[in-house]
Image (cartoon, rainbow, N blue to C red; front, side, top):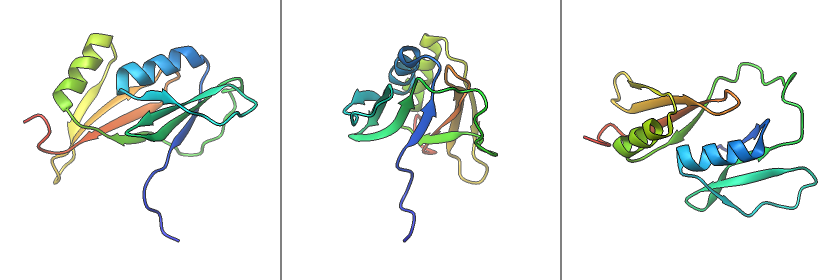
Length: 125
């Protein structure tokens, strides 16, 4: 076996409606089909793949995720993304990857999860 890429990330949320709205508005993900689990949640899609699984109705406090720092998504349209985040009042910081020139944009979701959006070096230039 070898790893081919990131399939999805599962995030426990305190307010499902608020988090659905955030991931749709801030990141442009769309809600789609989800198996009939016995707990509330939502699956959010990017280009036909469920990349973010939101889980509600389970405690957030006391979760142990070790040294997990952030989740990163590939992005496109850096200028449009920055404009959308500003319009929504979502604080974001930017930097370039040394030696590669890729653009990184960091923000936080409503429950404090750190998100990185990575853009190609020539995106937006």
